[in-house]
Image (tube, rainbow, N blue to C red):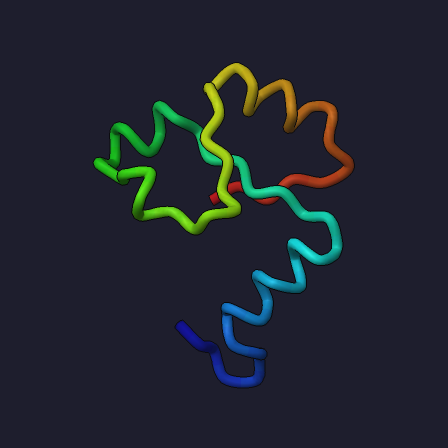
Length: 65
């Protein structure tokens, strides 16, 4: 995936993690969408819905998709 004017997505993701970003994935959400753990990048951490809410509340910034 690449958008004109931006670095490749793989570079953006690498920078995100280098700067301390965390990728947390809601377990009920991926189950509902039939996404398997093996479909995710290795850095993704699958967490419960409740943990996702708690982490979101305590974070400085959150991006949800």
